[in-house]
Image (cartoon, rainbow over all chains, first blue to last red; front, side):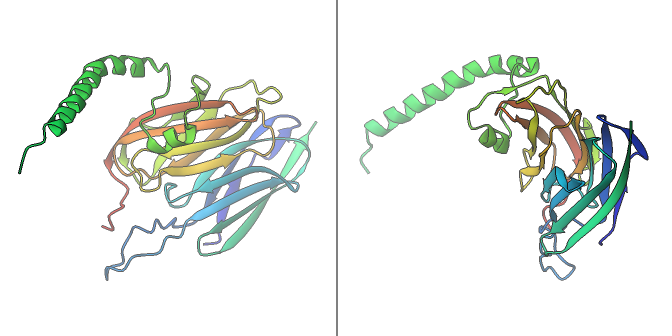
Length: 107
Length: 159
């Protein structure tokens, strides 16, 4: 777990909306599956993902078990100034993770 | 047992009403096809709307017509502008008709953004209708629905 791949353009122009892509390695366990012994596997899905741009929240996703394993989200953010995108997510088990990506704004 | 005279009469009345509504049914699909209004078959979507009107045409919901694997179905949601002050998007809800958890995801936009487009991958438990609804800052709604045939459903029965 704990891993995520983030894709942002190397450079963006001020005022433009740029695409952000985040792929998190996570089973997104639905809670409906059983082990080989027939015991239910507890639900464990990522329930919250936030993206902050230099500290200001710009996107938030609340997934459920309806989001596929290894969740992928792409969305757009308006370029303001160079800095950092900070991602945070947590799952039902209480595990929290974070990742960062730097962004360069030209113009 | 003595037969009640009142009860069958009521039943007959109910049946007549049912027949009347069934007769009106063939007219409905024509409206649905025209997409004049998103249909509200997706229960969670209907519950979310709670009688409010949702505009169509601005929100696009792209999913494949046929998915071989219900475990990983690509979804794209896009809302076309312009996003004037008060008309920014606040959230987008994504609903499934048949999933055990009908609300697949909610996306929030705390800051105004010039381009509203989301891609993700969902799980779908069988052939069904999927609905998306965008809530704008002024409270107005935009909705879109799409039908998908799922050949191998996402597992929900523990198999």
